[in-house]
Image 1 (cartoon, rainbow, N blue to C red):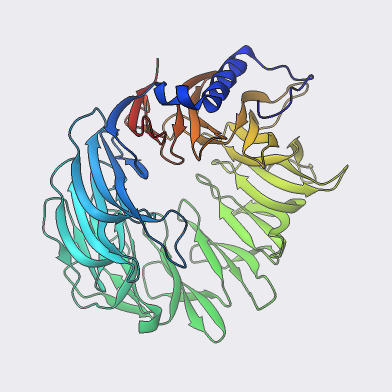
Image 2: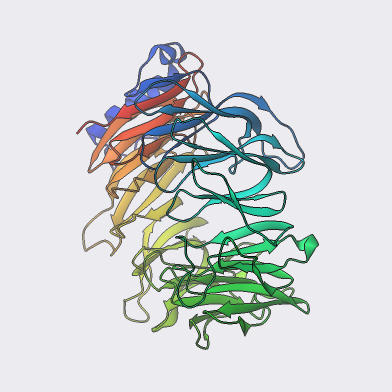
Length: 527
């Protein structure tokens, strides 16, 4: 096993059974090649990457790869053939050749079954040929020299920068090109076809820094864009698109500018980071930053003055579904740690603990978990839990010691974490506690032992994809945990390839790397 037996915490028979099976598979290489997991093969042969369409009907994968070496390229970068196959099995359709394994090489639309890919990729130019296909249909070659791509949020339309120009394309149609703008390098899009109410643009595009960093506002695809500002840095729409913000060079720093429908106005000076709340109603920003000093965090409802929340703030983030945020103040960038604070519009800021290096807010903004570095009884990195609605002065609750990785469930009911780790953090016990904290006399709920990673099902927060790091190859053994039960899926799985399939997550797609049975598989989960 991955760690010594704990005489004070006997293992459940369920956990022992799965762990023993996985350990046996990891130690018997000859039998591993003959073993069959829960999945059925849909593609035979080695693959480098696997991604599924949002509807779960199609799988895109990279195979027949040639390694590419470069000073700034990550290890195992390659150019590959991109294929698509029905998740139910069937013929493979080739989409493009020489598709990069880098993250922007190919991707599915956030809804439906539209695939975009960059073929014939030139690593020196950072550009490729854009191909677009629906499901397993014949791909359409859209444009050459493409350096930046994306999907219109919530839709199937593809946008891209090709040879410095912006285009949009619907599957099966010819691309539409934005007139009157060249030398573009990036864009930001709003969902839908029309500009939001209040005169806000439907898209923002920016020229490269070497071309002046000009930010342009697009209100109609058939009209030339309007100039917004020169020398811009970061830029973003508020969720919903009713406002946008950007930073623009001013002296030795950047000013933060905000537009809520009219001409942009200055919000703050010397800004090095900003972010809208998830409801689009508030803006947080760190201002007053200077060389050798972190700036101060302010939060403001759109169009109103900002309120000071924390000083010398290094990191901050909003909750996923609530106007609450947390941050690290008195931040030391040398150790990436500070004092954890939290607050938001209408909620006075407060601090919870010092020496915090990582933190996460629950989706509802009610709870915050943190990794705190402690020297009590020897050095340890402990997981603590605090509640934004608790009376002021209530200390954070220590959940576990020696933690490597944690996350709130998407429904904000549970806090999951890995603890009691061995093998440099690659094998840990996975447990969970209620997000509201442990009641008197209750203990954490064990999920599995020796775990490498866990991932939530995006459709059911009570279902997890759990992995174990193998010792004989760079691969994972994979299982699904659902409401107290572990179901083994397969062994020798390509890291990052396993994923739940839509529409109901009752299937898992993954790639096996063992040479005797390499390929793409789909497993049906028992009901």
